[in-house]
Image (cartoon, helix red, strand yellow):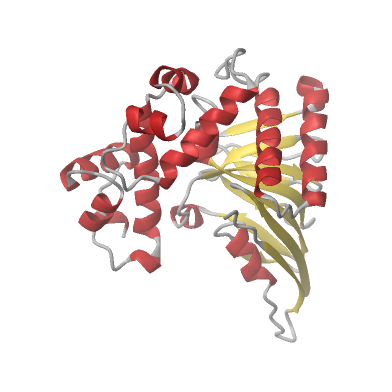
Amino acid sequence: MHELSECVASGVDYIDGGKKDHWGDAVDNTWKPITFLSTSSNISCGYIRSLKCQNLIFNCIRFRGEICCRKQNNIANINEDFYVLAFPQRPFWVTTNNSKEIRSEPRNTYLFSNILSCKSHDNMGYDTLNIIIPTRTLNALVSKMEHLYVFSPEQDGKKQELLRDIALLTFEKLPFLDEDEARFLENNLLNILLFTLENHSGQTEINDTSVKLAHRKRINDFIFNHLSDEFMNPDSIAQANGISVGYLHQIFKPTGCSIMETIRELRLEMAKQLLTNTSARMLSVTEIAYRLGFKYPSDFSRSFKQKYGTSPKSIR
């Protein structure tokens, strides 16, 4: 059954009076771990409306009187890696890997990884529509993602305009109770995003048709939902989805990863979620390995350290 969630929260926090509202927690729960810093203003107010459409989470966020930022300690507590597709109405800052700060412009659109620090402008508050896209969803479509993309009218022209218009229109029409409608809209938005990314990356093949992209995403979701099956392999995946093994390899070729590599990557990402989730602390590292289809805990620990640079036990 398609999960559909909606969160609407708003409030005014009179700092002198000590009134506390729930909107700050709502932002933290829907937009992942963030930190609020006080400013010289004696009043702060905020609003968020968050809706889920398949794997995508649409957020309309507005607030004043506080600085919103994602610091390194927030990043460390994120369970699942994701990208933010942002359509800012007011400036914010993104810190790149080389510690360079980039100031966003409302005329541009931004796609950036959650591993980058970001913060709102000190005095202007925050006003944006953004879409949270799981990294695994994008990795199923593009072989190698950069950490930051900037889409501008000069470089991307009507592609950027179309991407913005479709995102805004989709958000306005949500929620869609029919799962097929929601999946159709998600696929369309992702296809337009890939269309825009063509100007910035050579990783999306020209012959990657919408049909192939839709099949690859569907297979990726199937793999994600069957990670506990230790015997999952190209033959079983192809059979379960009514396609040939040859076609399965063909639709995953543009990602640069084989089917078994894709399975391993998704298992490791889910393992990281479980290891950092406080509600799963009763599970040992060995139990997590078996639950995610690893035949040998030692293989799991070695692969985890190779991907994340640390052992599974060290991040608990």
